[in-house]
Image (tube, rainbow, N blue to C red; front, top):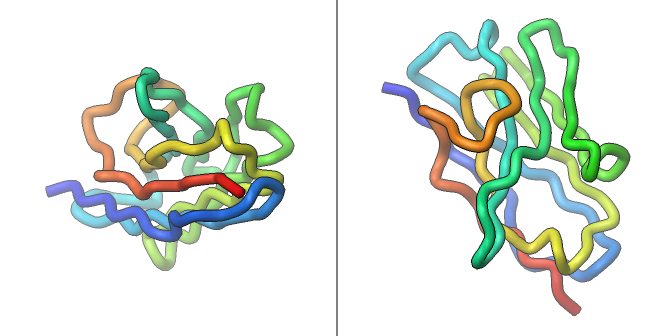
Length: 117
């Protein structure tokens, strides 16, 4: 059974940084494409970034430069480093198995990120 557990969310002020983690189990993580996505209140899901088994990355153009995706195959974990956070980044952030997409077959429950002063 695929399990994805996110952590690292919270309340931050505008301009601050945050690193999210997603620990995976139940599938071969090292050969899987992993993505981060988010869903803000009242909005549809938004894909943010993907990382491939060869560590190459792909980003939503709107996020590139502020968000960095990485992975640690020894820990079966994918990360999302976010900087210069804005109030409009407030959303539930979740990781998923697969490449750039809006919907995923396997995704985590998500972690809440709130950016507010």
